[in-house]
Length: 219
Image (tube, rainbow, N blue to C red):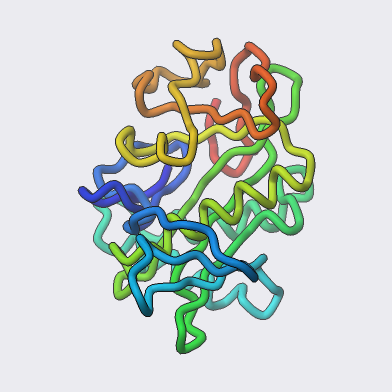
């Protein structure tokens, strides 16, 4: 679902279509700063300004996702097409829950997306794809944009987030194995350690099988 690197970051973490060894965000998690700025490990000059995607960002987001997944076997532009399809689906797209990270020069360095899914009949959000422009991987952009996005989901009143991704990476954001920990089941036979859930409001996630938006093509 997301393309992460060996350092547990994200390059191009896609959706539930597969678990990649290069899960979409290649960037160490950072600490929060004011005004939407996260500093990667406190290193000078590595701050990332995170914000909601704006309409004028859409072409750059597509280029970013294409570049992030360019070296992921079997990608072939499908992740960028997935983002476009999710954006067109009013049942899936959640305004304000596509976030980007700006590099100091104004380039879009990273993007992460939450869309509507359901656990049984209960609304939840799915984290996918996550992508970092190759030139900014392993510099904290992915962690910054994911943290900001999850905070935005909390503020919007979302209760549970799920992700299929690189097991060493997502626990730093609070994700835990969904099936064995909460009884949140994947729609297909995915590894327990790779399919994860996060309570955004402190409540226990509902039990049930996850149903993704139609664009993911998961039956």
